[in-house]
Amino acid sequence: MCAGCEQGGGGREPVLLAEVLASTAIELGSAARQLRAVPDPRGSGGTSCKRCGASAEWHRTVRGKWILIEPGERAVGSVPAGKRWRIAGDGTAVNLGSAIPADTCRISHFDLCPARSTSSAAVA
Image (tube, rainbow, N blue to C red):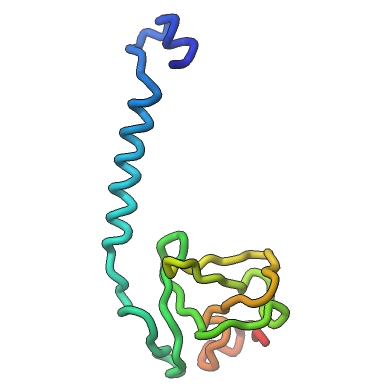
């Protein structure tokens, strides 16, 4: 308990930290199960781009959104910072931001799609 709760001067009933942590763990576990239970709205695994027809794979991001990732790995030097992705063991797509992985990374199909608008910056 915090010092204020121990002294009883806070005007509240003391709350044990173990009780707070236990209820929080239960709520977080329930939320995680619900997130895993949401099916992939785009089908499972590989698909093709509706614009250009190229093969790609849908992956959920760490923020719960979906991104179409190009198949295969690319040399880090060929992918600009901020466009580099890793696929975690559970299939989650993780944007590496400006981090420079040692060898290879993945890239979003949206950054390479030949059918994207011509105003978009090209990625080599």
